[in-house]
Length: 515
Ligand code: PHE
Image 1: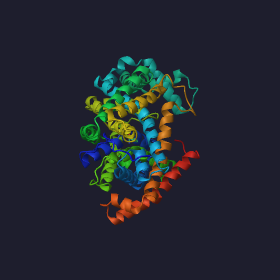
Image 2 (image 1 turned 90 degrees about the vertical axis):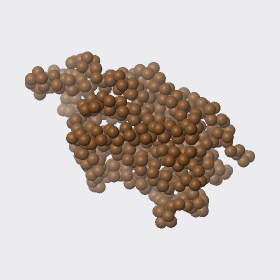
Image 3 (image 1 turned 90 degrees about the horizontal axis):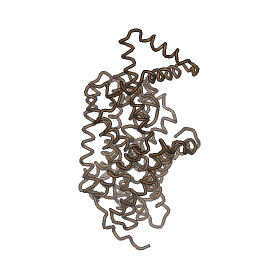
Image 4 (image 1 turned 135 degrees about the vertical axis):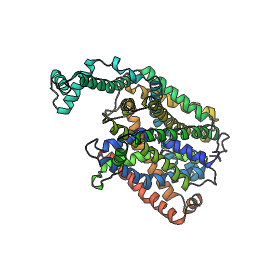
């Protein structure tokens, strides 16, 4: 193969801050705002055990420091040294070897993640519209008394474990618990308030047109940013969206911390009990660290490839990891603080919580009508800066390796991803019954990306950096890192990261824990 000609459309960051914001933009996303609080809640044992959440958060922080940070440095290092996309980087650094396979796996992960991630991002866009119009406010006229009684019946059956309980009995008990008219009216109102967002969300999921429409809208937004290139597209938008995101997060955090349940949320999150640690908790904490930090598929590697030689790797990685962690913890304080303040529980599982529980919470909160718009905008911004990094991985491959101009590369990549993504958007309605091993297309994509592609990629990147690159190559890239810290990093990337992640994968494949 001939020496690759430097691609004409390969750009670079305008500044190191631009890079840090863009990489933090990639990292901060639905993973922080939805998945992290949700997993924390799940391991927190709900209201019953106050220590589970703290234990999970503690494990997550350990994984972030011992696995996330070293891998983040490795990806930036590889990208900056090779100045190529994930496939080209391995080809450049070790020509003619099979290492480029890690790059191809990353590309595949980029396709797969973007195609379902943009679907959920599209929901956030729809919810910005819903919250501006304040659709959630119409609950009194949209939920009938009968529907409330159905819900009461359902809840009573679940609570008692008696599936044969007659509806009349459940309704009679409910009425008996609210003997006077005023308290019955209050209880009915509260039930309707809770039921309506669920109905709205199911209505939305059931509509193929709207699901696909908002997915396309989000893909278009992503294309719009990536078409602009590195400095004047991705960097420029991240410079606007990231500070706006941090500001919105700050406003919501201050609001929640001044509510009665705010302080309780802090206690809930930061009181670990080491005897509670389980293998399952550890595996989820590690998987979440990968996904949340955008590691294992070359997104950070690609962003690193636009860095200048003079820009420092170690401190940049530290800044990105810190920002991502602070956002995940703050989002959890916001969500748990609101839940505790209003005595609500997060019911059910899955991505729906963000769209069913949040509108209820904000209706209880003073100023909630405006803040709910802020909340969904925040999610949109966070998701957009992540989808942009996913598309850039594929685009950079087409630009570097296939010699395409940026507009053509972006259009081709986005076109294919859109075609693959439409079945994901339809997984909730038309294709809901099209399943493999009990999983819809959407679930399969998420499972493959989070549980297989990212960890395998992470192991590959760690072994490549730890064992294949020479000491001199690494020392040159990390010249500014003091020797003791360099040594510690080297031990982590050679031994701790590959062993820990391989352990997780084996446990997963042996079916010890579910994905
Ligand atoms: N880190 C992003 C999030 O937390 C998701 C992501 C994964 C983005 C992998 C790019 C690459 O939402």
